[in-house]
Length: 350
Image (spheres, helix red, strand yellow):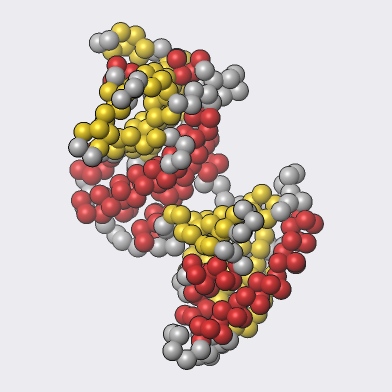
């Protein structure tokens, strides 16, 4: 295959060797797979994911500018949200589940040339620069979580992307490699900052309530069954693009696709089946909003539903536009809910 010039990126879960040595293997392997899947999904569509390497992923892109750094920091944020969600969602007392927070993530990027070869049904990267980016994983950076970038990569980025990096050369048997690193602590803090975990009367900017003609277990399907959700939200298709942490809803993400090309994304930040779910989403005028749906049984055949929506008051928020959008959306959404529940509670449909 032809030689390609691009950026090689390694995402390496740090602390895993020590973690797996001191924990139960079954759960530690499951957690590793879940964390690697988060990295894979974050890179997918942006970088070519060429090699899975135990507790690391090696990916490539022909992109040479600072977008690579953006993809790395977004991946880092997604990784730490999942670590947080695993910690909050699990009830398992084993050491593997209890110490998942000990696992970190670091990245290495190097601009160079490489070729891809298929061996069996797997792709393998070859070239001196492939060897070099792997050498970078053994370095003298005095941090647990960071991104280390070689000088050829760094040179292709604009000054804004290079801010916050500290020059630190590395010496290997192949010679001195010039590069720089950046601490990712601030990225983690921002990724984990949730303005709201749930919304109630004290924090809501918009509220609707309805008595649903269905028992609570059926009503809960309005928030968990993609086909039912599609009807409720008036979408052409609802797709769960990421499962929740450790088999729960927390951390799961779904997208609603509409026929005019529009789509909306929802990330579940908390869930207490079958009574409550909070998602992070966006509305016109509001780049970050939180929506909490609460269900309360009213006997055996009906359920009270509260929908609370709130958002932080930032400079880039247009609350008026958001409230107008929600007021216009509500009647159709309520009609969809009633129609779906009539079908779900009809004879022979439960």
